[in-house]
Image (cartoon, one colour):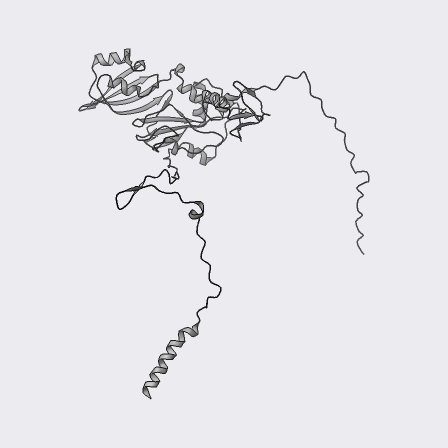
Length: 370
């Protein structure tokens, strides 16, 4: 039996299910406005820098809100579009748990992202983070080693570094010589330096061998080369300086020189509570077994390779002893040269060409015999 054709449905006919007429709800004029948060605070929480840095960034005009330049103290909501240098910025309206990294800095590295001399920087080894950047908590000069903390929270970094909080810094110092009891007392009472008086909260002798002696010092400031200058006031040069503690964070013995360790989530929560900062109300993210193992493992970072332009290369020395700078190749020359085209009228070599000389030699031998 033939199957009947399916009847086509008339689009003009009444639909199978009647449409429901939804009425748009009117906005309540008496409803409280949506709460706003300070823009510079959200930018700091996003890991772009401290609050003071974000205020300077807003004053420079590089930040816009809904297409208009941002102003100091401006509040924003989740519906506003914030851009930095024409790039959208994801603001953490709901506080997220920041990341904290411990690094055992060796000597010979600087704590700076911009260096015209091109020296090795600690930022060249840091792992990449999404929606933020690493902020160094305090600095260590090139000849100082020890504990260096990095975080993605500008507020947490400000809580460590701001002078009004007076966070303790503990150092292990080796000097060439030995302090007397009077000099140790004077270092605790205070010495007048070029930029004002300075002193140690405590200083303890740790022994030594020969002319070198170790001391453990604690102070609550982070002025440039302050520890070295205090010892140099007594003509005692510092031969080695190492930071072993910054606030509640100690340098773990298993983190050897040049190694890093990422703090676990519970340890980061403890730091936020110590700093009197709000702890995210959201539950901690459940880590996989691989993430748990990686979070507690000390690792040695790898230096990211940086491309050096022709203008930044050192000049080359010729055979005549004169220096000649490198010249940057134009794009047309630097590009890969195309393979030469094969001539269209080129004759292909065949097997008959190989047999011809042999036949010619055979004919010559027959002529000689006759």
